[in-house]
Amino acid sequence: MGRPGEYMSYCNDGYGILSDIVRRCGGEGSYARYVERRILGPLGMGRSTCEFLRPSEDADTSLLYSDDLGVSEGDRDFYRSAFVLNGGGAMKSTLADLKKYLRMYLNGGRGEAGAIVAERSVRDMVSPRVAAKHHQFYGYGLSVGFMRDLTVYRHGGSLPGVSSHIAWSPELDRGVIVLCNTQNVPVSLIADALLRIAAGWEPPPEDLWTDCPWEPEVIEAACGHYRSGEGAKVTIEKDGRGISVLNDGKPMSVRMVRGRMALLRSGFAVSELRPCFNENGAVWALRLNDRIVPKVG
Image (cartoon, rainbow, N blue to C red):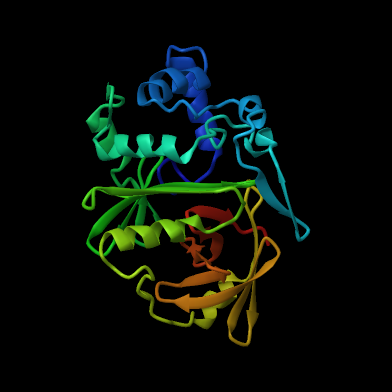
């Protein structure tokens, strides 16, 4: 889509590449072995694993609930949620174990048994590298955002039967872990609400946006079909209110705000959409949250 470093579009393939770098250079023979010996073991995360059969055969694991044509069914098919990328979503863990992992970051890379990673490496991970969303940047594997006068570091995601999010603020010296055994749940909103409570604020965030209809030429340029290599499909069309948006075939509630941005709402979840213009004024892609979705027609 551009020169190296010109654009940032979040993609789980990057974690797949990273896991192979760890396999080749980590000195442990495999990515999973490296994680077990260098991170999980020293932190005492005995209920965390990169394996698939072990959690599926453990009676004390959650069912993974996925919605299939309106029917919610639970199973323990942990391999199904692996993306075939061991570095991009295959880890299985627990709330108690992740508390140890999050505490390591709050302690500058140290666990109870000593340093897991150098403090300078933690600083590198949370240093803003490139803009990802409105007032949010990306570091190395972690996003960097702000909540009033607080800095907030995050990572989360959703898989078949899984929604997860971790977040912490160094100023608060507090962190939040949210695990849900149902896919596509906006658990980041729960994490934000808990951090706000920890800061002594009301859980609902303030409305920071100003309504601002797009100019007709922007609407005209943005209309069309968009598709990403990861499978995302977006369609924008003109309507009486400005634009209508289908995200993966689902109609979205659209609110146009300053900066040629639209907020897409589905239930409690809100996504940011922004058209990307080239030097000739044509829209060649959309920025949908922290991903770029190229225009195809």
